[in-house]
Image (cartoon, rainbow, N blue to C red; front, side):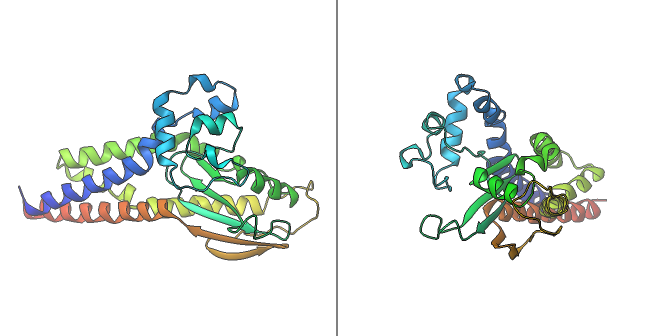
Length: 259
């Protein structure tokens, strides 16, 4: 086997492992679980799903209203009606500081985390603040993306498997799709921030002009200070992107030299 083909396979396998462990597997395992909780059908959630959630939520932020004894235990979280986030890796973190949220109680501000398939963190509090300034609740944005996300990642996994198994030249170009994941996420995230900031309602406690929320860095909205930064999931997407590009160029080189 050509050395570059071997490298391409190794790079792709590594990218596939990161994608599967960080995103695809927890998304599949936790799929529809939040809907069951919302509909009062907790008994339909399998022990496997609960175990996956418990493992993936180790060390993650939990709402300040959550009893510490319930942390990392989905059964206890459900029983105490605590705010429950999804299981996959968080990609972007946004926190908001406000005068009525003292540092002693909220040292990190009001944090929420964006995932491929949903949210985690102080989602209820953030939605309350959004309502205060005339903004829609978070779930309004990205509904289609959250619905198709799991299938899109399964499709990417299939692409990688075919890339490993076959050397057809046209398949190599499909590896450019996972390499674009970080940019695709930022583009979609930015679009929805723009949409939220430019589709304000008159139900807010006060009126603010349409604005573009901060995509990256620190910003200011009325009396609120915002912080918007990538978190672990985004860096994993960057790793997948780089590995996919390395695999693409390695296979391109191998196919060219094998002619």
